[in-house]
Amino acid sequence: MGRKIDDLFSGLGRIMNGFIVCFLAVPLIVTAVMAFDARSYLGPLPPPALSTRWFSKFFSDDYFLRGLGVSLELALITVCFSVCIGVITAVALARSNSRARELMTTLFLSPLIVPPVVTGFAILIFLSKLGVVNGFARLLCGHLIITIPYTIRATLNGVLGIDKSLTEAALTLGARERHAFWDITFPLARTGIICGGIFAFVVSLDDVAISIMLTDAKTYTLPVALVSSMRANFDLTLAAVSVLLMGLTLALILVLEKTVGLNQVIGQGTFR
Amino acid sequence: MDRIVEFHDVVKRFGQTMAVGGVTFSVASGETVSLLGPSGCGKTTTLRLISGFEEPDEGTIRIAGESMKGKRPYERNVGLLFQHYALFPHMTVAENIGYGLKYRGWPKAEIPARVAEMLRLVQLQGFEPRRPPTMSGGQQQRVALARVLATSPKLVLLDEPLSALDAKLREELRLELKQILSAVGSTTIVVTHDQDEAMSLADRIIVMNRGCIEQEGTPDEIYAEPRTSFVAGFIGRANWFCGRLGKGPDGAFVTLTTEAGSTLRMRAPQKIDDGKWRACVRPERMILTRPDAKSDGRSDNLVSGNLVDIVSLGGEIHYVVEGADGRLLAVEPNRGGPRVNKGERVGLSFQPEDCVAFPLAEA
Image (cartoon, rainbow over the protein chains, first blue to last red):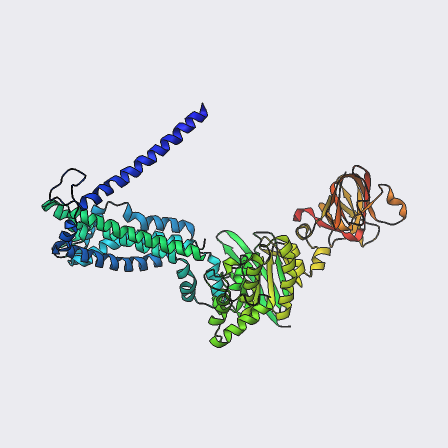
């Protein structure tokens, strides 16, 4: 009897997993199919003919291309700053005692808990009081706030995995603290740092909620451009852009997999 | 003789706990000294004070005559061999050994030759391009030692140097470590909780307990003449007798009347009081005899009991005797198997010179 119940539950578990995979994957597949739909209206699936017209429309639309340019520039600059700040903070956190570390980590992760709209609005008000009206600077501020928790977290994981005695050994061998950082901590935490950077890039590229508050007439990100164009005149360009973004994210994940995976093959991994 | 390390009344507290409570000792040039004690006795803190990872709250530390107050680890020229080696996993063996040379200002061109020389010293010629994670524990240990010795530090600190290795390898490496250390003539402090390690490596042992030095002396002195019951119990095995002391027939010896009623003669301690005392006898000094062997005219102590267990450890035999004074252990070299059968009644005789008494209140 007991065995039957166990079997029943493990069967249910499997069915549940199947549902979840479908729930996650089906909308993406539908979007991908729609992006290649040749019709100019939203018709029933499957589409009778395929074309790349929505992609060409996207690449000939100045409004979108401008958004894409701002998004990429913003994401790259955000990653640079966010990684630097994340690494410095993570190293400091790793050196403090464990209670202080937990408290500070929680504090630094709090931007993830505050609703992004609230954060965006707060930054908008705060910066306008300070007299910062430049759209790009505002966006950069907002994106740093939402990406830093990821870079801190990922780098901290990497740094905490390094045996403290390695740094101490470097010091007894005559290296100063800054030498020990570049010789030991930085290369050994590299995997964590790269992870954090890629996370920051993806988060920055995808954000709508904060960015929508901080854009101005000329500086807007791609996701913001998509949202406003969806309101104005809805067509399948949106699906085409979604496919492009999915492709970019997938590529980044593959890069991540490759760096981490390759490291493990060489036997250097995360050194844990 | 030159003193390389001088500790004067050094105190280190962590919050409420006193890790090192007023420690004074010195290490002479070329000497190997062991800091021996159980975990939490302050030996690791002492090591970290010498290497500069901790600053003393009180007292002074001098290395080669120079005060170490405010000196960072990299300003001290003290080599530290870590318990788990702390080799840099992302660097080759050559880069590991050359690391200290680079920062201690060796000319770049001379580093490869020095690395090769150090690898020869630890018998790992040709291991330069290997990476530490691909090597065995013993090999990593040697690389770590080569890395420490490469810069010829004034002082070498070894933190539990052999504890991460298995028993057989430990034996081999202990001999080799001793040879290498004496070959380079370095002044060495070995921090360990393992008395075998301390006794075999060190010229002098400093036994620590609860942040203080219990006794200092050569390995033989510490073993034969423990000054406190802690030292007697921590170094080697001991049989204990509890009771009260009384004056002996002559000044040099006293008698201990145990709770079970046996009367034992032993060396007189410096002061005698009416309190309870514990006496310690090494198992090797206990001789297994017949239970009525008293009549040979000598003044040896004799206790009797039943032989409850015989443990043959190959080289030596342990006899466990259960008598009125509790469970006692006698250890004899194995010369063709046990002399007595299990369950028989036996006597254990030992000489008064081999008994050391301590006031019980101390323990």
